Every structure is written in C-alpha cells, then in structure tokens.
Length: 162
Image (cartoon, helix red, strand yellow):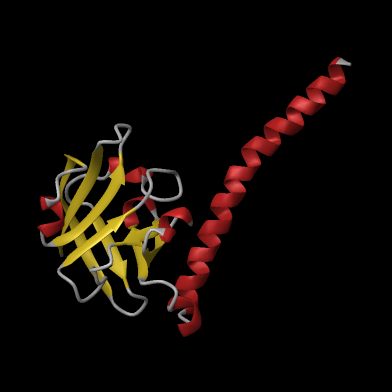
C-alpha cells in the first residue's frame, strides 16, 4: 500500500512540475515562430514584440485587453510601437509576462519591434503609482506597467529612446 501511495505522489509531483514548464515552452515557441515567420497573415495579428536582453525575455504585443488573457503584452489603443513618442504597454505580473520587471534597473535596455524596425530604449525610472495617477500616461517614452500585490498600486518602468 505504501509503495502505491509513493507512486501516486511521485506521479502527481512530476505532473505538477511538468505542466507549467510545458506551457511556458509552448508560449515561447509561439512567440519565436511569429517573430521568425514575418508572414503578413501571422504578424498582422500582433503590433510587434518586446525583447528585454537582460532576461532573454520576448513576448508579442497586441492591442486590447484580450492580450492579457493570452499572456501577451497589451498595447494601449493610442500607442504605436515604432512611430509614436508615447508607448504604453501593460501585462500581468506572472511568469509569462511582466514578473521580471521588478528586477530591472536604471540603464537596462528594452527593444520594441514592429517586426521590421527595432527601437531601443533605456530604463530611465522605476516607480510605483496609484491606479488613479493618470499623469503617467502623458509622459513621452515607453512605459511598461504591471500590477503589484496591492491592487491599488501599479509598477511603472519609464524608458527613454536610446
């Protein structure tokens, strides 16, 4: 009986550890496939992608709130990844999207691409703001926004073009 319980616990442990890794692998493969493909029918679904070299982190950018449900980076509807001077990107604070923003420091590089042109940014400021502080949306540059453990506060990474 003890052997059977140990086998079941071992199976469940492997299953619990494997599934999140496999989901991350699938998402990473999807992102790489889209970036490499550059096919109009695929890239037209996305505005571009973000790349943070410090973490070798890549993710696709999509306009609208549905991007958040897909563990993608959401672009504010008035933003333009290449032509705009005010780019606002948001994402969940989970292992698929923006949990590593907390490890960025001033001077780190972030690259935004529309699949044709890359724009390079440098982290200029990192701050926590209230969800009611809308002034942050009027600052030129790239802003990366994610939630914190306090649902009334957001982490904002403000970047300037390199």
